[in-house]
Amino acid sequence: MNILILFVVMFALMFLGMNIFVAMGVSAAGYLLLTGAAPLTLVSQSMINGVANFSLLAIPFFMLTGDLMNLSGMTLRLVEFAKFFIGRVKGSLAYTCILVNMVVAGVSGSGPADCSAVSSVLLPAMEKDRYPTEFSAALNACAATMGPIIPPSIPMVFLAMLTNLSVGKLFMGGLIPGVLIGLAIFLICWYKTRKMPLVEVSQHKLTLRGFWAALREAWLSLIAPLIILVGVLTGLVTITEVSILAAAYVLFVGAVVYRTIHLKDILHAFKKAVLFSSTVMAMFSVVNIFSWIIAVENLGSVLGDLVLRLHLHPAFFLFLITLLFFFLGMVMDAIPAMTIFVPVLLPIAEGLGIDPVHFGVVVVVNLMIGLVTPPVGGLLFVEAKLSKVPFDTLAKNCMPFILAMISVLLLATYIPPIVTALPNLIF
Image 1 (cartoon, rainbow, N blue to C red):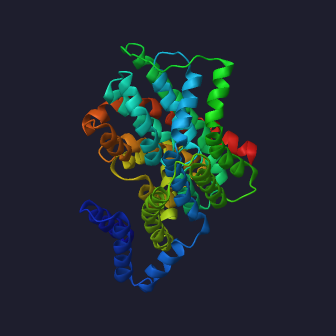
Image 2 (tube, rainbow, N blue to C red):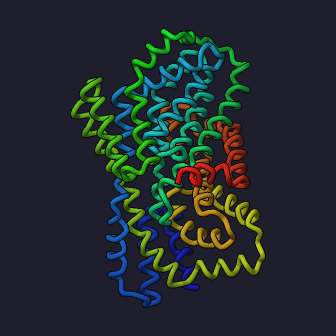
Image 3 (cartoon, helix red, strand yellow):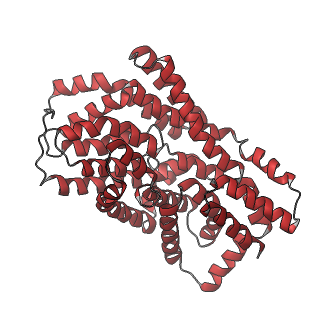
């Protein structure tokens, strides 16, 4: 009963417009006052312990790396490099958008960062080639969902800190689903662009000389995701050190080699990364107190026993989890959704024999689809602002891409090797 009151108060405060981490903290303090289970000082102690993890530094540095890539012009160079490989194919800029998002996803780990970086370059180019604006905006928004799925991934880092799962395994688990989402979006683009009256004026011929010219412009930009990938796979450095190395590399190339990043740009990028990460840290500060309350109330065991009594098959349990997180993704951000529900549901999944990495990746993929589903789709708001397309029009044009991504989600949910094959092979 006490735990029910806790969640009712928390969701009521969220509905009234209170910040999520404040609502969680206030409801937790109310629980302690109501039950007398522990002194109120437990709240402050738990908040300090919640942000005392060194690995959390990876989050602002991955965000910083993505911003610096855009400021340095690396994103534009990657666009030109990707356009070369697409060749003289109708809809080449649409396919370039997907390919660039895959590459940029290997740097920032943030959907909004990738969306802003790639859209600022490709939206004007796609308008010039007479792509319908609503299609271009929907494509850029949906392609950016690969950012938090393909490693590195800020939600994966958060999930690893929340559950003590391996960051490397979660990263590798998200690689194949992320690429499959890219291929699914590719098919939607092929179907839609074949009937568009496009005027594509900047297509490249596939020649060896052209390849070397494109590579000469882009090779420094391509090293950034390579640094992260090698660091994760080899284990020579921690995930935090990888993020710092990537940020330092992009800053050096932009400021010293390309000379496109200036002091005011650096200060702006650092400020943006700090503001973004502060919201994540605030959320993490209240995670510990919630974990303590869930443990005291034995909520995991209660729900686990309920699942056993109902004789739920693992496949049906995964179906219910998919529905739950799909709905949550529509109404709240990924990080609070994981904070509240994953610590309770993960032990139940493990009790049913579901691989924890498989479960974690499925949850993240599900919530990333939520970035482009109304009413709270974060990428929809970013893209609507960038493209000047009305929110409802943008959401409507995202539907074919969303259905394609849901098909990949179902494949990853019910064919576990799609997620677990790479982690089991590498680690």
